Length: 289
Ligand SMILES: NC(=O)c1ccc[n+]([C@@H]2O[C@H](COP(=O)([O-])OP(=O)(O)OC[C@H]3O[C@@H](n4cnc5c(N)ncnc54)[C@H](OP(=O)(O)O)[C@@H]3O)[C@@H](O)[C@H]2O)c1
Image (tube, rainbow, N blue to C red; front, side):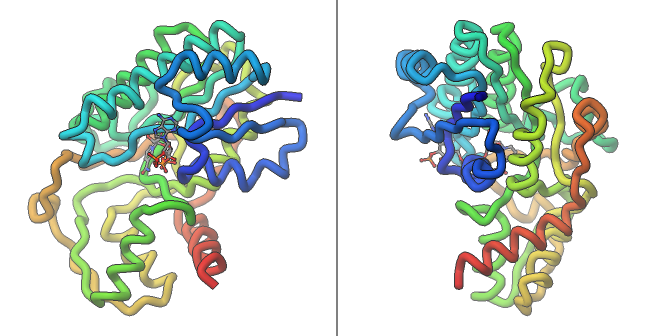
């Protein structure tokens, strides 16, 4: 039986993995968050790996407060860059496979065609830089690793853009949302399933960087309208430019990910973003009953 250590499992992706665990009976899961395993501690990682004979690590732990990272870059670097190095070193020592999750924010966002895995990175924010350093640390360790870059992640767990739009849309009936940042939303439930389906197919030649998001493309404005429409929340949405909504961290204008490689290597069928949004909204509504 493949023993899988999941880090940061109280977050969006980690919770989706917890939800799916019962369907993957060939895997034995150890779900941890910072209280059980602080990934910035190499000693704690080593102990966890040896005690439980871990064969696969799925690293969902991260510092994800994109704007706060601008003023908190030392902590963000420790969690997003140094800790993945510790996990990668442990994976190498115990001959385990490491799944590490990264972000579209490693790209400049100045492109206009979906980004492939080998295109040059040029993060525009402290968060993006820490995530790129994390990727580099994993690659430089030479452990068996699959790095999955994803974008605009959401789920029924935790706080995210969907929850914000529903809350303020219902309270205010009027929202302004940027229309000049283009990407693809990703339901963490789909990403969690993709990771679990990939694990048995992973071979040394299939290690490396992959891109995964839902299918399709939209702006945050389009995403907001779809969320509010599908939620039945009457709310007027005004499209605005990024310059009219200044935030501490610079976001990429265009960060659509090209997913050809992951679809081809692992025969994945990826759902369209609107279909997955409907599933997540149904879960949110069921959970709030
Ligand atoms: N969210 C997005 O839009 C997005 C987009 C692209 C890529 N990603 C990447 O996708 C991955 C999963 O993101 P997510 O949205 O599921 O993140 P999340 O909801 O923020 O979950 C991260 C979890 O890691 C925990 N954590 C923080 N520091 C830790 C430490 N030192 N040791 C162990 N656990 C720690 C967090 O605890 P606390 O909450 O207590 O800090 C939280 O439970 C991350 O690598 C992220 O960079 C996310």
